[in-house]
Image (cartoon, rainbow, N blue to C red):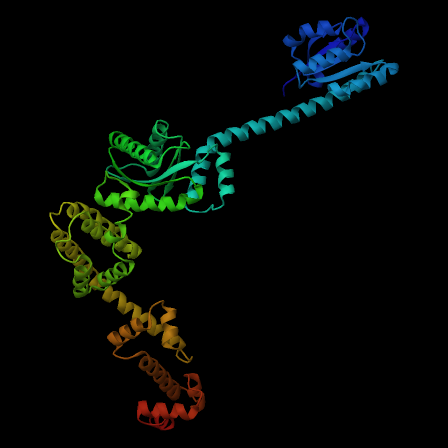
Length: 524
């Protein structure tokens, strides 16, 4: 623990000598200076820089009150203890306004001084520890600020914060003011092995280093493997100027990523806005532009303003995507050919639109793929990009897409049959466990998260029977087992296999087995 520096002042040699001989070190202190009056004390104050001053209240040249007032001006944190006689005590109390800490009556009681010093040392140590903790906290906050900024931006981009006042409050805490901004989505095409965190650090660091030459501030975060940038401009910048500046910034960042990492990066740029609440919407615009950029080439820069009127024309509908995925997963070649003709139309429909439609359709296969198939599908799509953008006409694109879909469909055929057979086995197992209940086709379909038509089609294909026929078969088999192996009454057997009306059970049994339950029991 640091020793507190002490200055002592008294015009009486006896008292000054007594204070000088006091065991300051035993109380965590060190004597740094002494003086016989306030004027001498002020001369030594700057060099001594005491933490505690012990001063007589009445001294020649300059008294203790005047000295204390001036000392507090120069050293605001210093603790001042005044020595005063009993008859001077009321006068001494007038020093409260200048920040005097304590008063000790003469003749000086050193035990009282000792107790006071211990208290002051403890208070000083507590204050030092608090200051240290505050400094440590501020250092951790400084180190964590980039992470905090990314977290805040991530919340903004994902729409987790919608209230404008809350957004402004959070931005203020990281010293950011959003007045005029553009959202950018960037996608890196990896050409060499590199740890993802290292690539992310490198790209973000380059972006933040370059941003100061183009904009007021830059906020960054990650969206999966994509980079989200909020480029903030000064108030008053026109939309056109913001857009042009943003393109130049992306071009420079593109060159830097290429020369430093040897990798290609494409960009999608949103419209300009001033309301931070609209960041999620603008990031969607940037994502849409980035998607188109990736279709047009790994080093493209696309602005949403250039595609917003054509975007829907370039894409396939969600219904078409789901239909294609179903046809591929079930191996329906005829259906695939029909859908491709429907989606791509006539061969004369040419340009970037047909390429984008092709990539949009193929990319949807990843979205709707089973987890185990997605990686293989993604590999095929990656290989497809060069073929599609190297095509000479729309007919070539269409033929390649059809060829790829047929390859995927044929690879799924065998797996689909095995999968369906196993699925039918699971459904029959469920019926075996619940045959005595009033189970319905709806219940079975809900249990396995499929449609009624799908259940009916699979049961008919693999068992040759409908749902109700399979239930009836299982119930009759169980009834025969109970009749031949137990002494249960016919009424009891009927109840156990799901027929609570005995007459109806006898009627159904005779129709299926050719004899009544009692006759069957006598015969077998």
